[in-house]
Amino acid sequence: MPTLPDLLSRSDEGDEGAFQALYIRLYPEIKRVARARLAQSGGVPGLNTTALVHEGFLRLAEQEGLQGPSRAQFFAYVGQVLRSVVIDHLRSEGRDKRGGDQV
Image: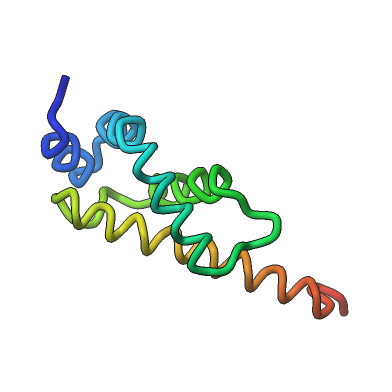
């Protein structure tokens, strides 16, 4: 079984298999970060922890490699991605509340 630093390094180079293995191994910790992000925002209607983690994973998967080869840098990056998902969700709700795409 590859070590965490090895998975981080291979993910940083764009290895999708390593990224998936890393995500599976760190899922509980990523979920904890997501829960903290939702708590910091005061709760977001329509967005739960699992949905936030999965949306964050989709955004992370779109990147060419990860930002930072260390565990601390990885979680800092995950925190930024999850925060941007929360902000985008809140903006979307605000847009819809104010008429959204009405012409």
